[in-house]
Amino acid sequence: MKNIIAIDGPSGVGKSTAAKRVASLLNWSYMDTGAMYRAVTLALLRTNVSIDDKTGLKRVLASLDYKQLGELFFINGEDVSEAIRNSEVTKNVSAVSADGSVREALVRLQRELGKNGKWVVDGRDIGSVVFPDAARKIFLTASQEVRAQRRFLELKAKGIQTTFEEVLKDQVRRDHIDSTRDISPLRKADGAVELDSSNLSLEEVVDIIISYQNYIPALNSRTHRHYKT
Ligand code: DC
Image (cartoon, rainbow, N blue to C red; front, top):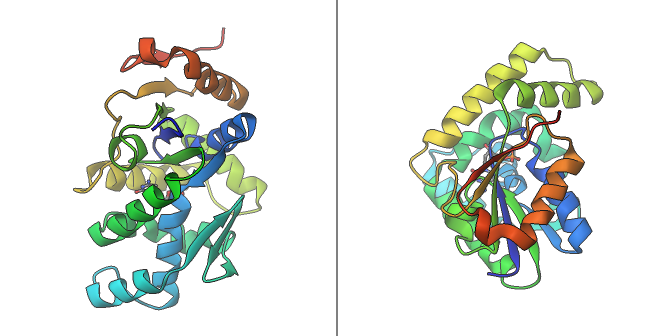
């Protein structure tokens, strides 16, 4: 699929910031698949339906009208952009995204959207499952400490009270669930280029992803580590 750039990687690695920037520079659309899993989680929390209640889950999935318009996310017409980032959703989203019927519904939606236009898509299974024939596949990584530090500073800037240790602990827990679940665990897709962003600025990550536009066949399946001197 010439119209898809897939960016996968663990939480807090800066995928969405990089993906948004790449999309804007190329004049492509950006699809935030994590926001979709968050929207389902929010809908379940609001209706008090547990992920183990399969009938309730089916009902919630069937009634969910989800839309992304630029940076804004809507459920049944309501702007939930802020709500899907709250701590309750963040705490529960890994368990929700491990469910097979949730994944099936959202992968279907992602493929449907991907049929038209040009997309930079970020998530965990984009290059491996959703769009295995994407034109470009990036597996973005960074060390646990760097990711937790970035997330900690982000939360602090938003005035959210937390500690670095708490953020790190929650990140390790989420990484574990995301990478050990049975269905579509987080992993580097076949043919993806691994990019370690621990020592890179956002602009450097974006420049490298855009430069892969030209060189990707030669770089397939290799790991690239870029360090500032
Ligand atoms: O990227 P994020 O933190 O907003 O993602 C929220 C959760 O959704 C996270 O636990 C991983 C999961 N997710 C997933 O399983 N598959 C995707 N394609 C995107 C996100």
